[in-house]
Length: 154
Image (cartoon, rainbow, N blue to C red; front, side):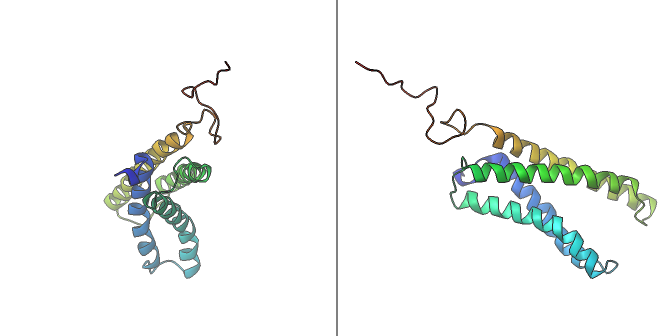
């Protein structure tokens, strides 16, 4: 289980992959969209899948979770997720999707739930990534900590 630490990041990756891998299939099997539209839809989806996959592979591979690149990727991924849903959810909520009344309501509820779950997972992962790595008060390698022994001269 240590390889899945930090748990907020592992959960964020899992939620993202669960939501977006399926969306790739839905995008490319949609007969109403042109190839150009499918490519356009695949760009943000692909970015989310790649970010989640890289972080998950890094964690499973034993990467240093306190490494600057790891924390910056988590932060960028989390901010990108929040920004995507900040833009996309109003578009979904206020557009007509050529569905029946009950289908339209269900479509909007499902996407609102996906947005809330995604942004909540992103928030917890971002919050973890913003904490100072254990053992370094400012995040820089080799910096003394409050618990480090103070050198004395005798």
